[in-house]
Image (cartoon, rainbow, N blue to C red; front, side, top):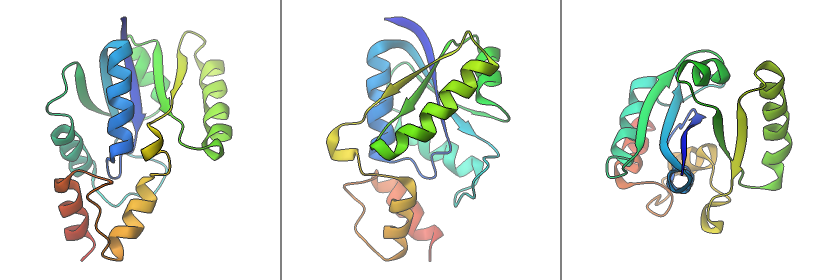
Length: 159
């Protein structure tokens, strides 16, 4: 295994797709830091504290996984944590262009930090937090997409 990696994101909310990437990453790295963006550029449904709490609950049984929050550039956070690898999930080919641009920009800003792309299991490849929030707002059963406590939190938030 190799040192530690950072898996950054908004996790609004955490899905089984996110958890699959976390589990895959911990098979490769000694430690995986799941870094929750405190003030993301995009609009979020859950507060920073709620997103942190949901992720902590979802990963409570996983060794070598730490949940932390961060502000600002991901590469600055990674450098502060002395981490040289960022994990990014790729679900579909449509994710690739954006993720590729971000990885190259990060490399230009900090040449000693690499980005590794992991693909979730195919049963999660179509999942997105946005899709989950839309389905929740329409009363869908989300049990195959998110842990039960995330589903409850979504439905409570969207009442």
